[in-house]
Image 1 (cartoon, rainbow, N blue to C red):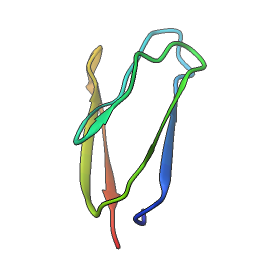
Image 2: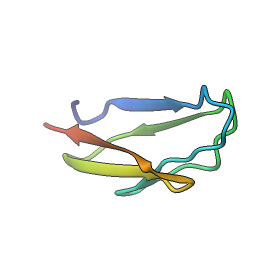
Image 3: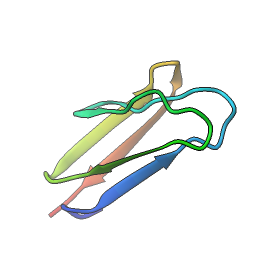
Length: 63
């Protein structure tokens, strides 16, 4: 993605989740909750759900 773009995570699950890592930290997301983050710097942003550490992802931001 490009610098200045925003990602929105939405919890469609019945379990709680969150987004944590590489400068990202959401509150606990209940079913239907969302978390948005605008990426202002180039880089690779790894993240996990601390409640379910096997749930992980990466956002790559380029100029």
